[in-house]
Image (cartoon, rainbow, N blue to C red; front, top):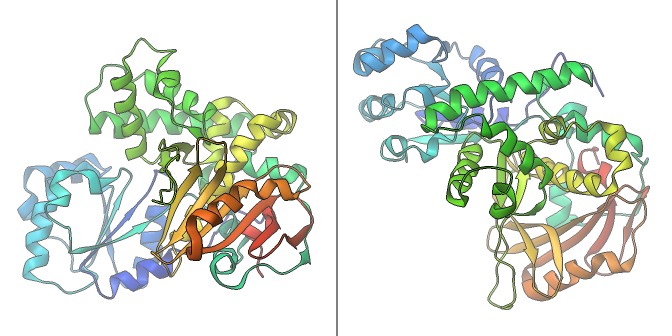
Length: 415
């Protein structure tokens, strides 16, 4: 992989555009994903001041006197980790309503502050939102791929690729957190993840809810990592704990709010009545998942079942990261019916187009691997744009009209 001193963040264009027409812009995503770096990098060109609510003194002033705090702010300012002072949102609303000049406030948040009632009742309609994930593989490689465009528009041409082989497991284990990528794989990176989780549990989760069993959160997240890319099963997740199913369900919601895991909803259509309506569970980053499971690249290579799970999450997260700066709005789902047909990832482009992606860790593809994608095509009808089996192979191939086998490397390689 290229050096880690500087990574391009393709969400920067979205942020710059938003600052030209919105009084406030929220950058939200997990801790250590690069929100502050992105905000300061873009803000430096326009003279933005910077204040962090991780600083207890600044947080205390903003909490005690939010009106005076906002009145004294510079004309353009970055307010970092704004979830710590939700009472500030109403004051920001008043300031924006008095002066709607674009680009006044850049807010960052490491919890999903959109779910905080005080925000939804105040800055809604006055604020643009930029979602920042950990690094995508194309950002790590500094490439501009065209996978999503080809998925809905051009299709995939026959062309050779270099197989990833052992490098695929290494990428899965490395994940996308910039600070973790600077460390050597193994003990140092594992310790970083331990400290990372401890900080989130003790600060962000504790702030979101008063729960008695904070020590259960890392263990629950490890259990979720073992179930990544599987249907959510709260009973299985609750089994090792002396906690009720509703409590475990609440804890999963908290972990989602700090962007550590995500539930992928099922795709629905009125053409089919036997669809499974349970969401799938995905960890927010495969580097974190592997650290929780104590799995290195060698362990993944030896355990094909675990490799398959984590590869599906790896592909899902790469696509979500690229979609976050994509020109068109994309919605993600999975497809499964009670007859055993399934598609790992279904992407909807507005109301007009549906594409399916099946993920396979093997180096070969057969016609049988398109079974679920063909079922999806029948269900989607004219909306069906493309069906792809992503695999660790060496050639992009057509498998009939609208169906392609495409090497995983094509996700991030420039066309």
